[in-house]
Image (cartoon, rainbow, N blue to C red; front, side, top):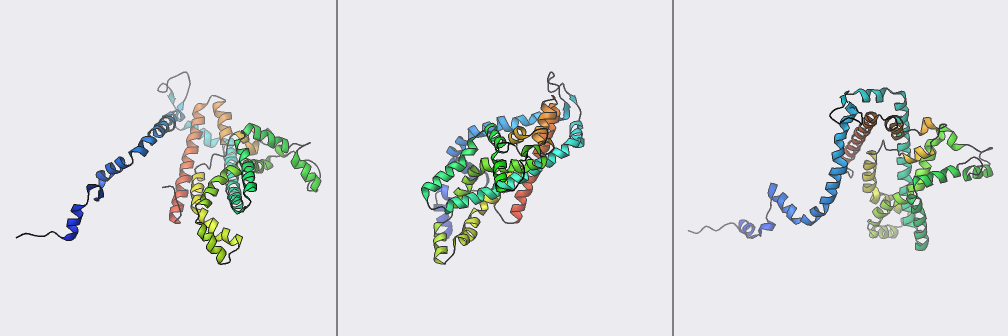
Length: 327
């Protein structure tokens, strides 16, 4: 007697091998075969990443040695956590850590707010020639080196002919010129304003790309329903940008101890050093300049560990809140 197979089973067996469900190693090998072109394109970048980003990590061992350049890496004297103890007990360390965190947070907040606002303003401009000119002008400072940018900032803040003092005197806000870079507690605000001026146009590009991905029919439907311009921004544009904003916020949390080096070094002076010296300048001054490479490496390890903690914490918080996340 002939036994007929069930209809579903017959259909499955008739499917080509590429259509059948694969699991485990078969699925992995199938994906490798399907995406072999993309994988081959990634190989040079993976090699570059391994050589220049991962292999140098073994050099962290000198943070636990009394490193002398004349000796080999395995001939050094091991000192354990001595450099970390010196780093955490140095009175200057907590001052530079305060400065680093303050300038990082100011730069992050101002950077997000101004870049998002500028992208929304550009999106609302309907005069295309004016929009292109305005965008080009906003990008240009990003391509200046910090040497040139710091010189422009110094001249703008100078005591005699600086445009800031001139304008404030004309408006009657101040009675006499102020030596802005000579007063320490002005320094964080000056760095924040300089970073915004230099990078706001460049940072707005990614938000403009996020706005471009929003379905135009949403705006048309909102206009038909009588929504005003501010209502369209609040209920359509900002929610459409939200995933990009969250991802960039998580990524920026990984740079919480990277407040910059060049602007602080170029605009800093002995009068504002208590507010301008950050971790990178501390490492240069007390580590590399004095030949104490072990101390500089210990400071670098500290920055990396703190950055990892902030990055994973921000990503975990985004996951708990149901927002977009990196992994």
